[in-house]
Image (cartoon, rainbow, N blue to C red; front, side, top):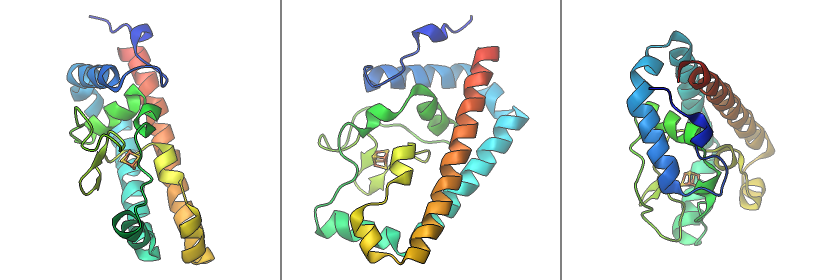
Length: 175
Ligand code: SF4
């Protein structure tokens, strides 16, 4: 049966429950074919590499330590409730394709739906999660390391974009 993508929830007005239900339905229907598509496999491989590289660069440059210190001791949280509404169904589907188990409810009612006890629970984060560098980081991380982090962030978000667009096109022709 053809999927009626006109009914797919897009934008922040739709509930997370509805978007999750759509993502799971698309995953159940298409994941086997998607994961055996050479282009999707290759784009996912590149994307995963850039995510890994970004985390490595953030660790080496001190960003991970600063963020942990801020979250644990200074009450900072960049992952507040509502950010999850930025995610669309394709973002969620990509996480499922990457093997992520998406939570059916938020662990912390004041936090983002995808925030767990030890941090973010998903692999494919939204561009606003990936690209954000706060004042504290600009003040405490050297300019050279900020530039390294920015390059790694940019690569991750560019590869995410290419994969998302390809999957949207794939769904349009195979769905
Ligand atoms: S998706 Fe992850 S990184 Fe982004 S706000 Fe939610 S918990 Fe934080």
